[in-house]
Amino acid sequence: MKYAITLDWISLNLSGSVALFEECPVGFRCGNFVFIVGTTGTKHYKYLAKIQYKGRVFGEIQFAPRSPILPAESSQLKIENCILYENGLADTIKEFFESTKLTIKGVSRLDIAFDFEKFNDGTTPIEFINQLSTNQLQRAGRATALEIKYAGAEITGAKWGTLKSDRAFSLYNKTKEIQKSNKVYISETHRANGLGLVDGVDVWRLEARLKGAELKKLFKLDKESGELTNLHLFEFLEPSFYTHVFEKELHSYWTFLIPDENQKRRSRWDVADLVRLDLHEPQKLLRYSARPGVSLYRVKISIKSLLENYYKNKNQRAFTMACELIEENDLMKHVDKRLPFWKREFFPSMDADYNYMNPLVQIALAKSQLDLLHYSSIKSYVLGLPKVVLPPTVWKRAQHQRNV
Image 1 (cartoon, rainbow, N blue to C red):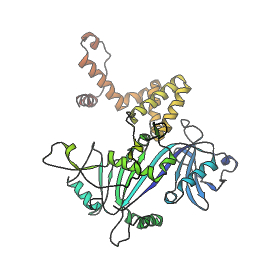
Image 2: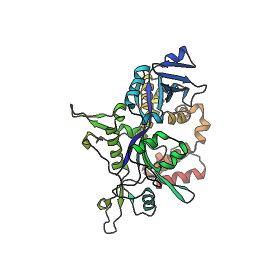
Image 3: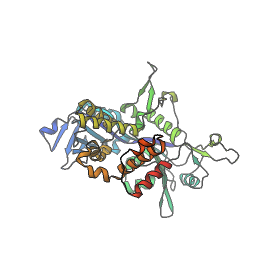
Image 4: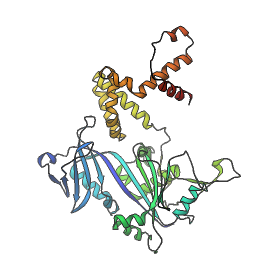
């Protein structure tokens, strides 16, 4: 099976002072890197600067957080797509950090692209999508959102997962996309790997998008200590490493089964032979941690509790811990959206009308009353509870949620 596997997106959370900005707020130089600061920032950062490296675009960096929740020296770097396809990528990025003295806090998003013409069993991508739509193939594991893309009556691709997911896959016609984007460097990568050489045979892309908690599940085996350690940025930049990462994501998320009417148990169905990678290193070098992961929901609850402790008790340690969780799990957008509502919950007296009119609060009150009526065996205690006067529709929704 002919293919090309590359990194297609890297964005990083950084720490450190962009010191030269104070001396020259329009633009400044750090070694071979030139920062051109724009007149506007982003939703979460006051400034956005384009970065050039030896006369060509390198990426962009957002810095100076608007919210006090983020540390003042936090910033986010997105590396330009064309840089990711160049030889010596790791050396260029190392030079950037040596020149700027910034440090990496974590990888916030990583996209791995797998370009090919046909699957290993000879199936074309269009045939594969048709097999999915007619249940000739079924995805292994838990159900996830599947969206088949069309342009008129023509199938153009498929997507698994959503924009908010920590892990998602997409399949689309890369040849047609390049005709619109004019990314010549990707076509050169295709030709170097024997793809796109036959007229009428398009190159397709299977892309894995990883971010947040999903990236933190990836570990490697340290040969000297024999312990599992987290992967870091410069290891992700090595082709052998991100090829193993992609292989593990295929195995755990993007595996398809061939239904067999004679076998009721799905575990006995044959696995479709779609992608086969040339792995030159032992697969045990990289694997998922066997330790149970902390769900993002629990992290969000922890952040809310810590912030409540900070706002009510002025506990600076709680505030610091909340900031670390927000940054590590890339939850700034979530906190920015929820914080106004959380503050109203932390201080009900500030906005009693809001809390009473909030549908979620109303339903929670009704559910708690129904729970007490259902479970309590002390009738006098139940009768002594204060009456909760709520609209009939709220009672119905609360009763429905208890019954589900």
